[in-house]
Amino acid sequence: MRLHYCSKHALILSIFIITVASSSKGQGTARPMNASAVVGTWSGESICVGNRPACKNEVVVYRFEPVTNRSTVVILLADKIIRGKRVPMYRLEFQYDEARRTLSCEFTQGHTRGMWEYQIKADTIEGTGTVLSGKSVARRVKVKRVREDQMPAAPNRESYGL
Image 1 (cartoon, one colour):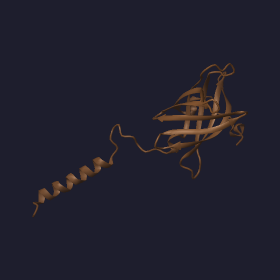
Image 2 (cartoon, helix red, strand yellow; image 1 turned 135 degrees about the vertical axis):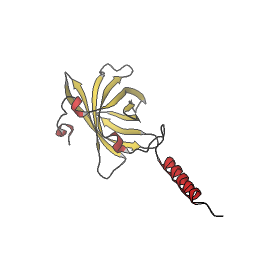
Image 3 (cartoon, one colour; image 1 turned 90 degrees about the vertical axis):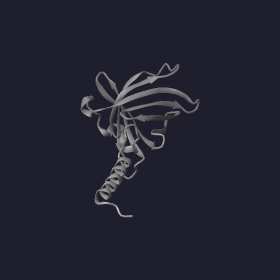
Image 4 (cartoon, helix red, strand yellow; image 1 turned 45 degrees about the vertical axis):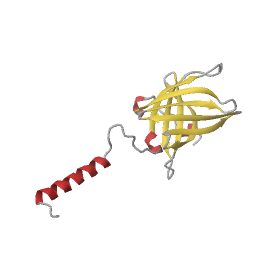
């Protein structure tokens, strides 16, 4: 079977269009992510859950930083804002689960073992802090991506024990 000159070009053009269309990102299609997608500054609320008299609601600033040669791990430098200043709270290492689009970290603070787990949705991260002994949620967090220059000055990295 011989194709005419125009038919050959039409066929080649059709194949090209189909290839480009199938390889481009369509609207609503989830794009692959790794832990570096959360690198940057995030701010929002950390709200107490349940009867915890010592717990205080906080405005928080999270700085997620990459870890060299570990694409599924980020470091979180967490601050709370008190009287317009950022006060360091803790530094934790989070594991990123691409399939679930979550960040999680098990930690021990004093006698308390806990787990942070965050769900990532574009420029919003929502999650919980759970006390593992009773498997009870202690905090709910919701933060949005912000520019660092929109926040009070960050504490020195040494403040987190780095």
